[in-house]
Figure (cartoon, rainbow, N blue to C red):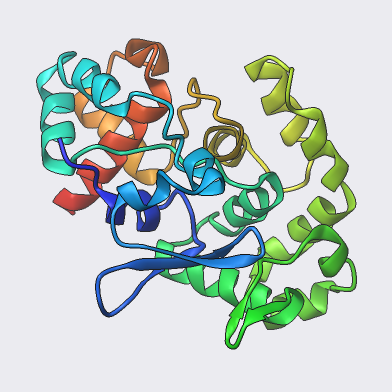
Length: 246
C-alpha cells in the first residue's frame, strides 16, 4: 500500500511542512530546509530516516489495523499508509498548544508567524521554529499580537517549564501524561498528541471533536484499549477518514 505523504505531513501531525507548486513538500528542520517528493527521499538522510520512523513496519501495522473491523478497514484503504512522525519535543509541544480550538490552516499560520518573529533565517524567507531561549523575550502582549489569543499565557508557561520536556523519557505513559500536564494549558488531548508525535508513545489516543464523533457513532461501547497495540496509529487512520467524510 502506498504511503500517503500529504496526509502524513499536512494532516495534523506537524505544522512545519508546506506543499510546493511541483507537489513536493518542504520544511525547515534541523537547521536546514528539507524538500521531499516521496517517502523514499528520506531513506538516505539519517535525520529524515529517524523523523519518519523508517525502521518501523507501518505496512504490517496497517494490515493488522484493517483486519480488526470494517470501519478500520475502510479508514486504512481510503487513506493509504500513515506514519507517525518523530518531531522535536519543544516544537511539538508548542504546536499542539496552538492546536487547541483551532484548525490546521490557522495553526500553521501561527506556527509560521512565531518562526518569523522569534526563529532565525536559514535561507532567504525560511525560518527555524524558535527555541525556548529564542522565545524567552516574548511577552503575552507580543504573542497575542501574533494571533495566539488565549494560548499566549500557556506558551509563556511552556517556555518557563521547557526542562520538563527532557524528563519524559523513561516515564510510564500515565506518568508522562501527568508531567506534561504540569504545563498550563496542556490537557489530556494535547499531552497525548505530544507523546505520540514527538516521543513515539504509540499507546496515545487523543480525543478531539472528530474522534469524539467517531467513537460516538461507530464505537459507542469501546475505548482506546479496543485498538491495542495500535492505539495511536488507529486514531490517525480514523481521524483522517472521518475528516475526509466531512
